[in-house]
Amino acid sequence: MLTITIQEKELFDEASQVFFKLPSATLMLEHSLVSLSKWESIWGKPFLDGTKKTTEETRSYVACMNLAPVPSEEVYKYISDEDVVRISEYIDSKQTATWFKQDPTARPSNEIVTAEIIYYWMIAHTIPFEAQYWHLNKLITLIKVCNEKNKPARKSKMPTRDMAASRRMLNQQRKTQLGTSG
Image (cartoon, rainbow, N blue to C red; front, side, top):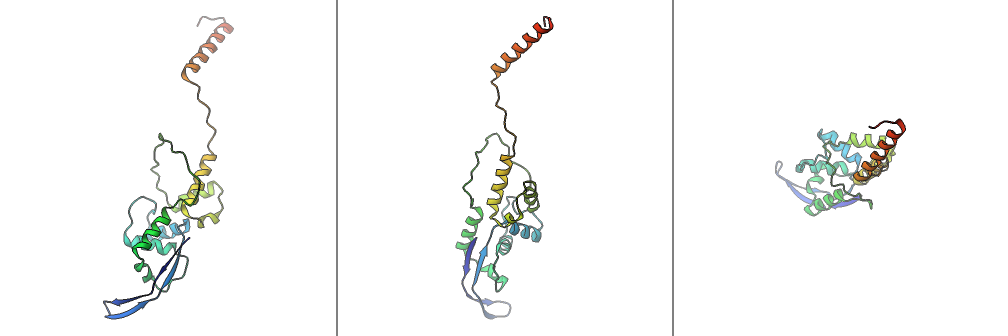
């Protein structure tokens, strides 16, 4: 969880020509499957599609991540640039010590990942629904671990020369057994 405090600010409303105070607020942000699902419900598009989000979409995601009450939705407009950097670093953080060996021959997946796809993966691997509140990167890492552990064991490949020798030997045994010349 990331906690950010937005200081009280005195602002000017152009429309009414009046000064007003925006009260301070503490945001308790959690980048989770629940946040992702809320955002996708609002915007009707995948969050994890790799496209750059607009300022409005980014503010909306911060609001979806927030677990604390805020005095006004205006608070999200006044998040400092430093806090935006902290939020981005938090979203991008691994949140786990697990790592995977990269397969250079593996093709990247073209599958569009949405909240429902991740929920499906959770169900398929019998991951408890309480994990929907974990940091999203930690949950996705657990899903990858489940995928790796559920893969069938690889048979060790025999070198080509050994395979050819084995076939020659088997063919010779069959010829002898059947009394044929080939």
